[in-house]
Image 1: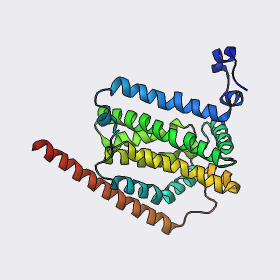
Image 2: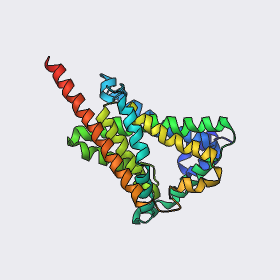
Image 3: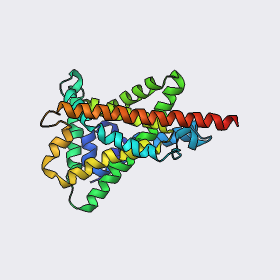
Image 4: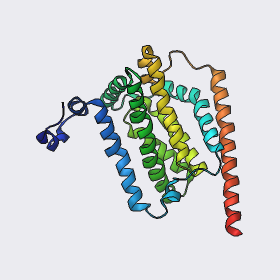
Length: 269
């Protein structure tokens, strides 16, 4: 196993699955996370945000720890809506776009989720939970969302467009809508809290929850990977989820306005 020097020079001629077969699935995931997201994001920050990096990227804790609490509740209480969007996605015309890539990613995901022992569980939490949470939030929220907001001067447009790019980036259009919904949650919690750590934490929780669930329920891996529920989500559950999301969104926005007002007052003093 491994790539020879001549093969490395011609690596662009290999399909992703051939590269996986050569170097191994976990090394492929690590390489993809580092070269595809994390390193470009770090280089971008070092070049364009090198002055006052903490404030420019949000590498600061939020003014209130309650942002973390509300964001976690927002994530969990939105799961019925996310699941509904996954079921809806399966009926949309774009669900079969890049079907070969989606099938390949699905097979890779299935292989990752087949774990033997606590060591593989911890390895997956690092590779699938921690690294994407850091790298993708740096790349999409601190990078793309910040740039779109600076260019268009429209918060909602920048967050929604970033969520679209975030979901399309994964090349799994059979799961586009639920990932887009997740992107909205990540984008708004980042904007309201002014801290990158808030979306990083809920991104990590979301990804790691899948890994931990798969570890303890090996019989339902295909259902977990497909994101489609066996039975329809009850209407009352969708309504409760929607109301909960609205209430938490209102509370987080209220905290954001209060913090913004306090910052203005402190500048005027």
